[in-house]
Length: 183
Image (cartoon, rainbow, N blue to C red; front, side, top):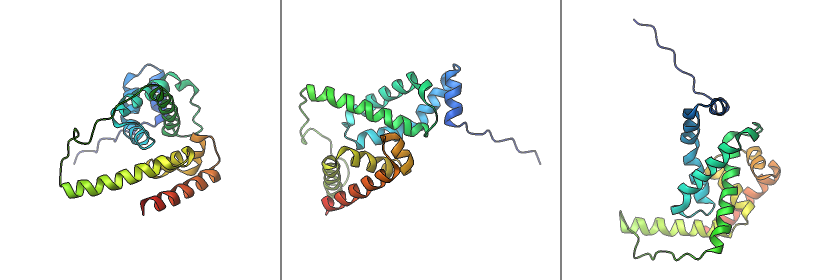
């Protein structure tokens, strides 16, 4: 019987940040690998067009890595990253309002899979997206950070500059409004 090889400990985000600040490019790549998918879901859920999500994720990481020295560890790195992502999205939305976009028609989009399931899922997705758009920005952000990202209320409060109690109230009202909209 051979002795078991030791299992390498998974580095924390704080350890990866310190390694990146010390010049380890792989540490930055690992932070991106860990958090990019969650960041993309958050940005998509808060109104970023699908075609722009990748660019917004990239811009968020660029800003985060430039400002990483300001990260004090008062919240999780992912929470801090979502805050930056929200700011990047708001900046982009201001730019988009100044430009005129012509959306593609439904006849141009591809439709794969069972047509009935596709239609039902599309209707539910459209109702949810419309419901999210109708929510006040704070309620929408709290809902997405809680329901989509699984953040705790204290983390949401830190990310959005509010209190945990206020975050709970915003989440409660968002859920209530979305339920009303979906029925």
